[in-house]
Image (tube, rainbow, N blue to C red; front, side, top):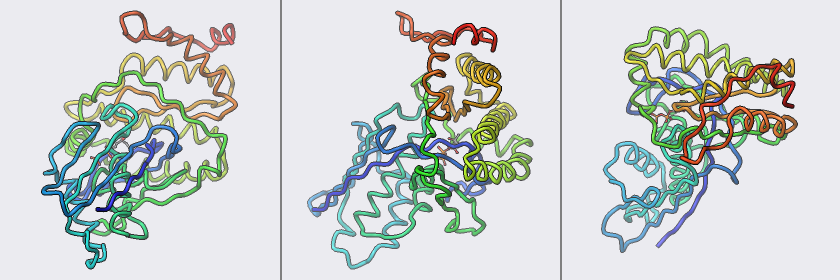
Amino acid sequence: MKVVTCIAPVNIAVIKYWGKSDEDLIIPINDSLSGTLSMDTMCAKTTIIASPELQENIFWLNGKEQSFDNKRLANCLQEVKQIADKSLPHLNWKLSIKSENNFPTAAGLASSAAGYACMVTALAKLYEIKGDVSYIARMGSGSACRSMYGGWVLWCKGSSSDGKDSIAKQIAPAAHWPEMRVIVLVVNDEKKKYSSTDAMKRSVQTSELLKHRANHVVPKMVKACIEAIKKKDFETFAEITMKESNSFHAICQDTYPPCVYLNDTSHTIIAAVHAYNEFKSANKVAYTFDAGPNAVLYLLESSVDEFISVINYVLPPMDNNGDYYKGLPVSPSQLSQKL
Ligand code: DP6
């Protein structure tokens, strides 16, 4: 019997992946860029057992048995086995795969990214594969390829039809910008209304704006954002991050029928970030939203305490019914009285 266990963290895109040119291989229509969280935060953990005693493959996610008859899982497994050494005795043993996330699953918090990155890393370890396997994690869930590396990661869409060059690369390690912090504001931890997979397909089919975004907006943003990260220029990094999140949600609105992910609380957070940045006369906090209402904030360590007090003022903790407040409107002058 062989047993391997791995953990992989979530990554949060600052330049979003949205739209595929190949649905089966999961090849994106644009490059994307993200920061991978540290290992002690939001993570997936996967244990794989390969045993000659197992009669069938089994897969458990967060304590619930799932069907193994899943195309994405099958594609990853097939690809890993294809590059593995064929003389490994356990290559044909059946597998028991158990994955768990230490945060809400499918709530727009990049759970599939951490999940597939973790599973593919575990499979690569089980079958003793060395070298980059981010293109295999990509076949499980596109954004997963970026969780294969720490720090700041670029997923290049690539140009080959087999997707072998649609891979992730680290552009800077986390240690390059050690003052960077991420705050995740969980506005709603329920499963998202429309899966990213279905919604981005609908965007590709119906949004004219998406073509403009993928071909003209994102390439410039990626270049400028990499430069800002390399120079540790938070002002520019924050502006690109917020504009990019807004551009992505504009595409969601332009999709027909539209996919509305942001709610009133998300908009309250957006307004609070802009009010705070205006009050500080500089971009001190950047928001970004994936396919859900939950806000992810990028900020430097020096701004964390003060911005948390802004959030506690604008969005007091839950009321007794367990409902979230919609939030209070806030202006830069109100902040100057509070802080
Ligand atoms: C909004 O990677 O979940 O989080 O490839 O269909 O599994 P599939 O989609 P997925 O999409 C993530 C979309 C996003 C943006 C991003 O992480 O880049």
